[in-house]
Structure formats: C-alpha cells, structure tokens
Amino acid sequence: MKETLSITTYSDDSNTNEEIELANTCPICGVALSPDVISGVLINYEDEEDNKVFLLNYCPKCQECFISKHCFDEENGEGYLFSSSSPQTPFGNDWGEIIANISPSFIKIYNQSVFAEANNLDQIAGVGYRKALEFLIKDYLISKATDQIQISNIKHKFLGKCINEDIDNPQLKIVASRAVWLGNDHTHYEQLFDDKDISDLKRLIRLTVHWISLIKETEEAESIQPRK
Ligand SMILES: [Zn+2]
Image (tube, rainbow, N blue to C red; front, side, top):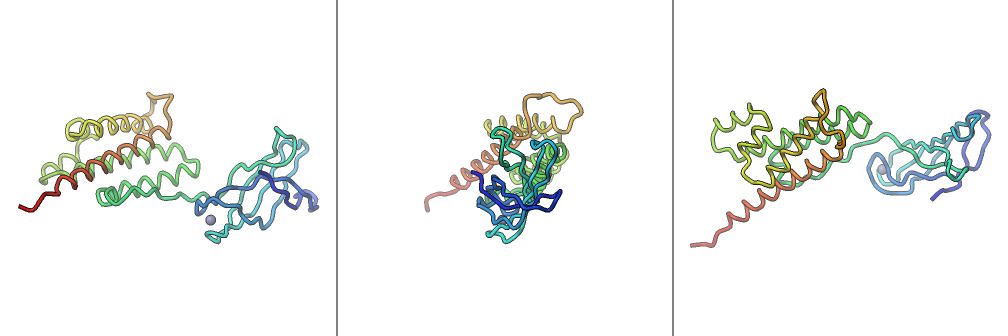
C-alpha cells in the first residue's frame, strides 16, 4: 500500500507530493513496522521511469534510522514502489542450545555468511556456508568421539569421508552428504549443480542442524532410566 508523502525534488529543491510504498521491515532490527519517514528526496530524470526516491526512515522499535530506495511504479504509471533498504544487519539464527553447545564456531561462521549474503556478497556467502557446515559436522562427530585418536582423525579427514565413515544415522548421513555436494559447488572452479543455489544449500544445512538436534535429544531421552 502506498502513502502520500511530501518530499523534495533534488533538481530544483521544490516540494512534491508522491505516492510511495514504504519499507515494511526495519533492516537493522528486523521488526515488521510502518516506519516514521523523516525526510525524502526525489531524484528525477528526463524519462520519468528512471526516477528514484530515497527516504530517511526512523524505526521506533530499535530507535535507529535507515535509508530506503523506491523505484517508479512502471506498471501503474505513477507512484513509487519499495526497492531496498540499508544498512542490512544480519539477524542471527537461533539454532538452539544443543547446537550452541556442540559448535559455537558453526554459529559464528554461519552468521558471518548471512551478513555477507545480506550485503550482496553471494560468492563469499556460499563459501562461508560451506565452511560453517564443515565445523558443524566435525564438531558434532568430535562431541561423540571417545578418545584423542578419533578426534585427531576427524580433524584431519576430508569432510565427505567423515560423513561416509563416521555418521551412523542414515537420515543425517543423507542430508549432510547432499549439503556437502552443494556446499562444494560454491568453492570449486567448475559448478556441477547449475539448478541449485544458496537457498538450497541453506535448506540442507538447516536439515542437518535439525537431525543433529534430534539425535542428541533422543540420546538424552534414552539416558532416562527408572531407579533400581
Ligand atoms: Zn529497527
């Protein structure tokens, strides 16, 4: 939905009323809201379709300001549609206590990758997600290891080999191996999975997290025994 706002035209400093679709989420705190618009400027071109509007928005929730960009609504021939806002701040995923205990490195690397992706560094983000996945799986296997030799083996082995040889649970084995396939695609020169992108990799990482959490929770449940 568009709102009528009085904004300044950049070329001649005149005021103009424009119908503008506002940002519906604050890019800093992630809260859905209708921001307070502090000021706005219309950059106008000879061809009206190239016009852009920039707004300075105030978020009452986090009490910070962000800038939003709005492009001419070509379909309706008037007004401006929301295009993007910045600064984009990544909102850390809550992976739960089990994952936080097993692999703090996974959470850190994953969140940094989210930050890269939010800033359009998609090539870096893919490599980051792949690295996060490696820490998640290796830290999980290390958490199950019973001696130092096993731990050292896991640390030095290729990730694919760890998954094949050291993961017992069949579901976890499937999702982790597919995640590694897609993850490796982001690090290799030649891509093998043209039709898969970063969101597919993230979905498989999420599945891997779920299975690890389930396995750990099931193990905890198994340890509940009646008093003899
Ligand atoms: Zn905010």
